[in-house]
Image 1 (cartoon, helix red, strand yellow):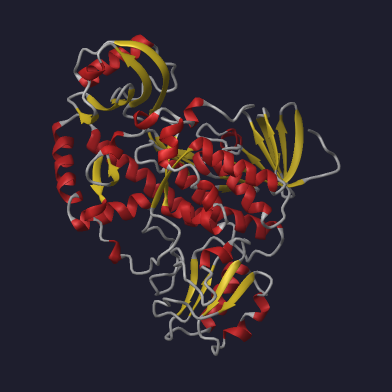
Image 2: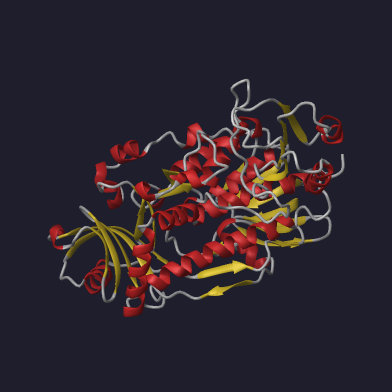
Length: 512
C-alpha cells in the first residue's frame, strides 16, 4: 500500500454506511479519498433480515434525497424484504397490528392516527417520508456502489494499527504498510482504533443490561406469547416462529460473548417466566446500553464520526441515523477546509453542532432504559408515559423526536427556520429544492427577483447556486441561504436586513 508519490486528501477508517457516505460527500468536491476496512467481506447475516432491519429517520432520508440516492435506497420495500427472507415472520411483530404504528419509546408505541402533522408548519410536500425501512446490507450496498462510481478507493481486509499526525498531515500504519493523508477520519465503530490511538476522551455511563437478539427453534413455539412483554425480571419480544429479543438486567455481564443454546434457554426462561425448551440456535448476537461519547470530535487532523464518536443502546434504532447525520455535516466542511475555502472555525462547528445532537440521543436511550428496568417505580413511570403517548400532543412529540422532524442546530438568528432543514420548495419549472442540492453546493433562493440579493451574491458565486424563481408555497418568505447539507443559514422574510445575508454567507462559505 506504500505510495511515495501520492498523499490522499482524506483517509477514512471503516467502510460501513457512515464511512462510505462521508467518502461520497468528499468526492462531490473532488477530494482524493481512501477507505480502509478491517473486514475482508462486507456480507454478514447480521446485516440481513431479520436482525439487519433498520429504520431510517427523516434527516437521513432527506440526505439521501438531496444527494440523488433516494430511489436506490427505497428500492427494496418492506414487502419485498419480507418476500425475500421467508415472509412476514422475518419482520417485526408491530407491522401486523390494526392501528398503524409510528414507532416506540421503550417499547411503548405511538400511532399515526394520533400524530398532528399539521403542527409542522415548515414541512412541505416532498418525496421524503418521515421514516422508511431498509436493511443494513442494502444501505451499505447502495453507498458502496455510489462511492466506487465516484472514484473512492476502498481497500478491505486492511486494519489500521497506528498513526502519527503533524501540522502537515497524518501517517497511517495499516496492513503492514503505511499511507499518508492530510486528514484522517475514524468511522471504525464503537471500539474505534482511531479514537483510542488519537487520544480522544470517551466518557459516559456503564451498561445495566445485556440484550440478546436470537433466531431459535423451540419445542413448543406457542408457549411463548408474541409481541413485546415486560416481566418481573426484564423484557422480551417474540415474533413467530423463532425471532426473540430480550433484555437481561445483569450489568452487561454477557455482552460480546458467543451465547450458547443452553445459555439462551436459561436467560429466556428467566425473562419470559416460562419453561420453553430451545431445540436449535441458528443466530445470536448481544448488545447493551453502554452510552459513551467523545468529548470532542476533532483532535488536530483527526476526526471521528458515527459509532467511533458515540455509542448507545440500539433502542429506537437511532445509531445509524445519528452517524449518517455526522457524515452529512462533516463532509462539506472538511472539503472546504482541504480546498482552503473554509472560513475561520468552520471545521470546529462540526463538533459544536453534532455533539449536542449525539448527547441528546444518548439521553434518549438512557431514558428508555429507566422505564424498562424491572422495578415497580419503572413500571409506574411506564404507565404514565403510556397515557401521555396516546394523546395527540404526546404522540406528536414522540414522533418528532423518533422521526427526527424536530432536529436543528443553534445557529443564532431569530427566525425559527434558521438551523433547521430547509423546506422542499417547488419552483415554477416544477423542480424541487432537494434536486438542486445534489452538487453539494449551497443554495441561495430568491423568490423576489427585484431584491438586492442579486448584487450581493456575486462574490459567493463559486460556492453557491443562485435560484431566482417563484415557488408554489413560499411560506411567507422572500429568500433563504441554505448550506450544502440542506440546513437554513439565513432567512429573508421582508423584515430582515439583507446585510444579514452577507454575514451568514461569510460565516458558512467564506469570503468571496
